[in-house]
Structure formats: structure tokens, C-alpha cells
Image 1: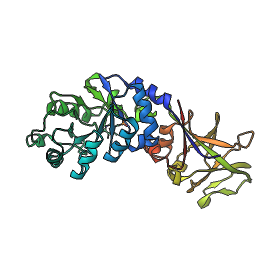
Image 2 (image 1 turned 180 degrees about the vertical axis):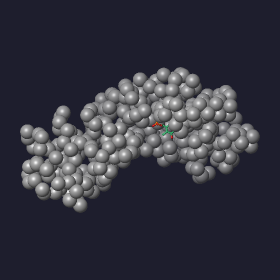
Image 3 (image 1 turned 90 degrees about the horizontal axis):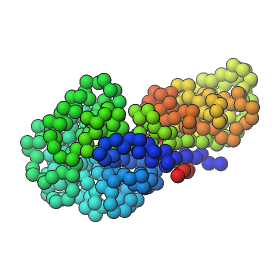
Image 4 (image 1 turned 120 degrees about the vertical axis):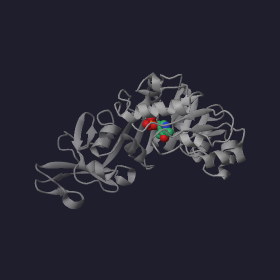
Length: 338
Ligand SMILES: *Cc1c(COP(=O)(O)O)cnc(C)c1O
């Protein structure tokens, strides 16, 4: 048996429909659809009705166009990073988000007339044109979209969110506009503008609290052994049996994206409804699990599923669901449902 990442496309589509509160709702499928497989995920979303997709890099845009064919709009957040990319934007009908005056100038020299978007930095200081740049922006025609990104949308009371909203409406008083990712959608209609850009919420993660879980990660057990009181398990001998124990060794580790930090935070693996705590440190390809409480030796155990989602596992590891999801390595066989 091979380790299997089970991806529920019906849940992804349901999450998109639940987040579809703005005049238009797009979908962010950067980083291989957050590690879940660009082709299948994007095609499922297109079936559900998504007409605008967002990726981080031009290469991702090229792969996405291949998967979707003509029709949907594809925006590339990083924009026109070098003039030689213009050919890829043109031949795949990709829309660059222009982020700086040099990008705008490269666009004008190499791509004039091709659809483009403008990305504004409204206070995150990460990506986009600043207010002072706008006076120097050459006339490029009408942008297909003007977007910006919120730094603190998952902290509803953070004062920066309102400041960014004001900055955005001041910099972009009109036009087709987009401000919100998953977190901003939950802040209400003032933040929706013409189109929203959810990513993590589609894949079952916070800050979309009502998200349907999307992934189950089932890991095969290689062998199971008895461990006596006082014996240890794993590197550094950090886990010591306090009772006669049954230890299963599963075939997965940090080389598969199950970062070592999950060992420190009380994560469990699950056999149906029974939690089985991690025993000892996560190795490169192996993890020890305390299965003493089961009445049988399991053939496999779930590390992601209904009882422990990406956010719970992220919390155990001192990180966020986004990082858990995008870390899951290419070693897993992906099974799609729906
Ligand atoms: C990643 C990203 C998104 C999606 O964010 P989520 O929090 O995953 O919904 C939207 N817009 C931009 C600019 C991004 O970089």
C-alpha cells in the first residue's frame, strides 16, 4: 500500500459556492493549487463556475492555460518579471499584474494592447505600485482589474484592515476592483468589490471557519512492535514507554512534508475515530505512533482527516494550515473524489 492523499473535489466546489458572495468570485490556484494538483483542481473549479483564476508565476499560468483551454481569465500576481516573459503571456493569453514602474514600462515596450491588471500596495509593503508611483504611471489603457491584498484580514479588529480599505478606494476610485482573499470575504460586502480571490478557503482552511474539509492523508503502517516500560522510540530516545506499549511505524516523514515540528505539539494519527499519539521524533521517512489503545494492529493511519484538519496539524507544529498543505510532498499518490 502506498501513502495516499485523498482530495475531495466536491468539497472544493462546495467551498467555492459558499464563498461566492461577491459579484464575481475567482479562485487562487498558485503553488499547484496549494499542493493539491493544479489540473484537476482548476478543472473542478471551472466546472463549478469559476471564470477568473489567479496564479503566482508565469510558468503556473502556462500550465493552467493548458489545463483549462481558452476561456477563463488567468491573472499572474508576480506580473511581467522580465521582458522575455512577454511571449508566454501573449501566447497563453495570461494577464500580468503590473507591480512597479519598471514592470509597467516593460509592459508598454513589449506587450502594449494586451490585457493587463494593476496591483496596488495599500500598506502590506510586499507587492504592487504605491500611491506615489501612480503619478508616474504611463498611459497603458484601461486595466482589466485593479487589485490589492490585505495583510491582516484574518484578524477582524486589526486597524490596518480599515486603513488598507481606505487606501485602496483612494488609489482606485473606480474600475474593476479586487481586494479580498479568503479572510477579506468574511469581512463583509464593503470588502468584496467586483471580484474576490479565495485560495485557502477553497481547500478547507482557516480563516474560512465553515469550510468543508478537503484532504485526507492516509499513511501505511510498515510494522508494529511491542515496547516495554522504560524503552524508547526514535531518534534522541525522547519518547519513553510509561506502560507496555504497541508502536506502529508508518511510512512517511519530513521528506514527505510532514515537518519535524509536528512531533513537538501533540499531534495524533487516527484509526477511524481513535486518536493514536505520535511517539518520538519524526524521521525523514518514518514516524512512530503509539497504537496501544487500539484493539488491533492497523494497516494504515490518517494524519489528516475529519478529526484533524490542516489547521489543527499546523497548530500542533506551531505553523498554519497553508504551510502544512503546501508542504505535502510530491511523494504521495493523489486520489480525487468527485
Ligand atoms: C495567495 C493570495 C491570495 C489567496 O489567499 P488565501 O488567503 O489563500 O485566500 C489572494 N491574493 C493574493 C495576492 C495572494 O497572494
